[in-house]
Image (cartoon, rainbow, N blue to C red; front, side, top):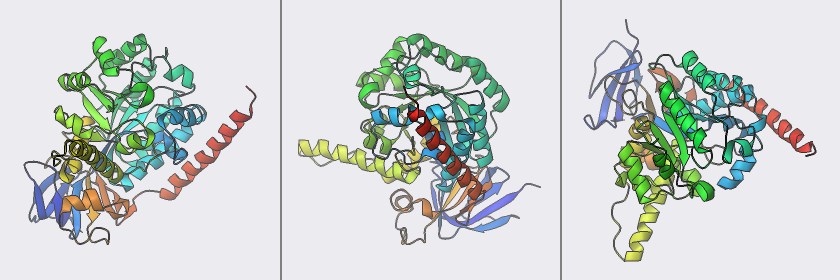
Length: 451
C-alpha cells in the first residue's frame, strides 16, 4: 500500500505549461511522486489542508558554495577580488572535513527552510580525501535533492587560481562517484566543479574536461565575471580547445561577447546566474534577459552566504529589478517607451523549471507534473506581507519571504511542516557555530605565525 498525502484546496502554480494554474485544486502524492493534480481528488490519504496556501514546485539553486555556511556574513562589503583573499586564501586553507560536514548540513537545511528543494553544491573545498565524503554526508542527512559538484582543493590561492597546474585528482573523483553515485535515481547526483581556462593551464583544463566526460558526469564552471575573469574570454578559449558541450553549465556569464553567447547557445550549454552577488560584488550585470535572447533558459543561484542572503526570493527580485532597470535606461536614452521587460511569471519559471533543466533534473523536478518527484512548497498566502492575493505569481515572486514558507516536501517527505524544519536544527546550529569558532581560531593562529 503506497504512502499517500493529499494536499487539498490550494492555489496551485504548477509551472507545467500543459497544466497551468489551478486557483483551487488538490495534489495527490504517492510515495515519492506526484500521482494526480485535479480541481478535486477523492483518495484514501493523509489530508493536508492547503486552503489559503500557494502551492509551487520547490526552488532550484544551481550554484552554491555550501561549505561557506560556517563563515556566513564574514565578507559583507567584499568585492570579488576581496573574496578571493578574504575567503579562499584565509578561511578555505584551514577548513577541516568536519567543518565541511557542519556547513553542508546547516546550509542544506537553510535551503529547505527557504523552499529550495534542489541544490547544486559547488564544493571547491576538497583539501583532503575526507572532505568530499563529509560534504556528501551533510547533504544526505539534510534530505535535500542535490547535485554534488566535486571541486578542487583550496589550500593556496597561488596554486589553485593563478594559471594552476594542479588537476583535480581523477582517482578520488572516481572513488566518490563509485561510492555514492553508482545509481542516478537517488536524491543526490554528481558533477565536476572545474576552474577553467584563465585560472588553469590548458593542460589542466583539458584533463578536467576529459575526466568529467570519461566518468560520465556533467561540468560546472565560473566564467566571464569581475575584473579578471571578465577579460579571460573563457568561452572562446574553451571553443579553441574543442571542449564546449551540452554537458556544461556556465556560471555568471556577465561579460560574454556576442560571439560567446552564440557559442554557448550553439553548443547546448546551460547558464546559472547569481544576481545579488553579481551586482553587489562586482561580477557584472546579471545577464538574465540577455541569455533569453539567445534561446537559453537561465537559472538562478545564491553563490556565497559570506556576502548575500541564502534564499531564492532575494535572487528573484535582484534579477527582476536589475534587468528591468538596465532596459529602462537603454530606452530612456532612446527616448522611447521601454519594452521586452522580464515578467514575474518568467522569474518563477527561471527559479523552478529552468533550474531543474540546468541541474539536469527536469525529468524529475522543477514543475508540479504527474509522474515527477513530489518536490513541493506551500506558501502561506494569509500572512500580512502577502494578503490579500490578487496575483498568486506576484505574491510568490514579489511579496513572499522565507517566513512564509510553511511546508516543504522533497520526494514526498516533509522536510518542513507547520513552519518548522523536520530536523534537529539545534544540533546543526551547534555544529556550525563550533566550526565558526574553530575556524576563527585557526585563522588567528595562522596569521600569528611569522612569514
